[in-house]
Each structure stands twice: as C-alpha cells, then as structure tokens.
Image (cartoon, rainbow, N blue to C red; front, side):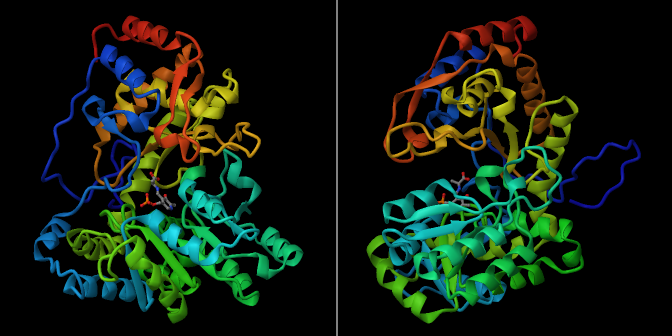
Length: 482
Ligand code: F0G
C-alpha cells in the first residue's frame, strides 16, 4: 500500500497489485440464505461455497497467490525423497529465519501434534499469551494444561494498546517460581493472537520472554502462523524498530526462539506447514515421528507444488508493500464500522475485522452463543460468511458445563489481496444495518454437539423464529434487492 495522500481527504488503502485472474461469485436471494444456514445447523463451517457471496471465514489457504508463486509451481521437482524443491524451501527458510533444520508438515496443527507429543507430559503446563483452538486441543490430548498469561488489556475490546498480544512477563516469572521450570513443557508465544482479534506481540516482548525461558532452561516456541501481520505491526507500531527492514525484524524475532512453527496456509500463502530450529536434538526427536504422521522428511505430507510456491511466498512476506495489505484493509473496515457505532475490537489487528458480539448482542444470554448467532444473522443479511470465535469455539468443562469464552467475536477474515474495497464496503453496509436491527436477533442452542473441537461440525438451532423475522425486516427495508 503506497503512502498516498488524497486530495479529497478520505483515507483509502491503495492496492499495489492488479487482478489478473478472477473467480465468479453469486449472491443468492435471502430466502435461499435462510434455508442454507438452517441446513448448515447455523454453523458457518457447514455452509457450501455455492451459497456464499464473500467468504470471510478465514484467510487459511485462501490468500491470493502471486503470478510468481503460480509460475514457481510449474518448476517443481516432485521426487519423493531429496527433491530440489525441498532444498530450495529449506534454504529460503534458513535465509530468512537463520534456522538450520526444517521439518515439513501438512499444515499448522500437525506441528502442534508433533511438538505436543514430544514435549507435553501429564501434569505439565504450557504458558502462552493466548491459546489457539487446535493448539489447546493437542496439548490437552497429551495431558498438559494451557495457561494464558496475557496482559489485562488483551481482553479489553476497546483499547489503544498497540500490542495486546504481549505475554505477561510478571505472571510468567511467578508461574516458574511457584511451579518450577520442570513442570513447564514449553513456553509458547503466538505471533498475533488469533482468538482475541489478531492482536500483535511487540518484538521487545519476544526478547523478554525468550530471556526468561533461557534463564530457566525452558524451550521457547513461537507459533509464527500469523507472523506476516505481526511483522507489519512491529514496523509500524514499535518506535524502536521503525527504521528496521522487515527482514531485519524477522531475524531479530527468530533469534529469540528455540523452535518456530507455522501454518503455511497463512505464512507463505499456500497450504502446508513446518517446524524450524537450530537445535539438532530437537530436530532428531521430531524427525523420528515425521514419517509416521506426515510423510518423508523432504515433503512431510505437503504437495511439492505448494512447497515451491511457498519459497516465493516467504520471500514476498519480506516485502512491506505485500504484508500491509491485510492490516490496512482491516483498519479501513474497523474505522468505518466505528463511525456507525458498531462494537468492534480495537485497535484494528491482523487476520480480519472482529465484531464484538458480546456487546453487539448484549440482549442475548451468553449461554445462547452471541457470536454464533451474529455469524448466522450476518450470513442471512448479506451472504457474507464469518467465523464464530467465542463460546462455541471453546471445549466444555470436565463437568459438562459450557466454558463461557472471555470474548465473543465474529471474525470477518480478510484474506490478503482477495476482496475489493467495494466488497468491503458492501459488508460494512450490511453489518451496520444488522447493528441497527440487532434486537431482532435471538440466540442459538446445540442439537448436535461433537466432544472435541465442536465448532467444526456442531449443529445449532435458533431459540425462536427470530431468523424469519429478520428476513421479513430485510425485505421491508431493501425490497427485492439481494
Ligand atoms: N496457529 C494459529 C495461530 C492459527 O491461526 C492456526 C490456524 C493454526 C495454528 C493451525 O494451523 O489450520 O494450518 O492447521 N488458523 C486457521 C484460522 C484455522 O482460520 O484462523 P492449520
């Protein structure tokens, strides 16, 4: 996004790319949208793309790829073992992160599986700035407990703290003192806290966390899935690093970690994942598990075409003009929604715009899944698919009661370079309409509920006929407009 001043004064993020391949979209009528969300059990994961206008479920694996990435896919070496593609990817990672060893895996949670199996023991803790759904599930399956040591601002929806994702260092020191380093499997920092609005971590906080980890002999692991946004925020929000290049910031950040893992569905803009380290013993431990769960050590379950495109995608991540596209579109969307009084998470983070469903739907009991209800209502009103990030995304307590989430968010992900500004404006328009008509929205209840990661396949139904009433109001206000 070039630094452009506008004569007319409006602040508009300006794209430094053009569209050279397109996919046709349809906006189905509201009657079909109502039917579709019912068929999907009010779970946006279960909608089919034919019924979706703008897919803001996630950026995972759906960021736009560049012409150079597509071209690279044609020059692949697809040997099962020892391919030149693997060597190119390993060399690119080591060039960017200064880490010698690379273990390829099929996606981010596969890293979490391997790392949890290797490090987590029954009765141990994994302190982190905030959990991610799959991370927590893998740690729990291996008998460990996740401890979220975030700053108090992290959960404050309206904040001016530029780094709400920071680890609470005092709490970390206290934990180590109280429990002893032996009880801690590893310390995890998520570069950009997915579940609390893509809020970043300051480079100073990585450095300080790493110092504590090293002094106490505890492995320090960074989840770099959301690293691209975090790099942009360090450069633009952390005074000390404003003159550093993205490449320099990446090196400084990487230096702090013993192990870095990532979902390449986000970092690198393809579909895959990986673990990198300089520690030979870590590498050897994980390598033993790799062929059993992922694949041979030079592809790890990934398509070699994706690996080749990842080489290019990682290099493009070092370009501030590329990594700022997501955050600047998100900032635009958040600022426009704020103008209309819609409760959103501030400051704008990475990954997507996050609506604060806790406040948006404060008239619904939290037990009736505010964020889930908002996801359902927005889809009906617009054909836009968002993702519930609240109580539905939590696991139940051991006694079977619902674990009420600290935040109830509807995430509207903005995959990089995918949507146009007019599509973003359409979404803003429908969100504002929904906010003005929020009292029409009611709650949801489960009628099919899986035991683990229930948000993927669980099905819910409305607690009243509020969805029909919402459709009625839409037709009154918009006539026969889609
Ligand atoms: N860590 C973080 C911070 C993530 O955001 C994700 C995925 C993972 C790990 C797991 O990676 O999906 O490749 O297995 N987040 C996706 C999302 C699912 O929609 O935000 P994965």
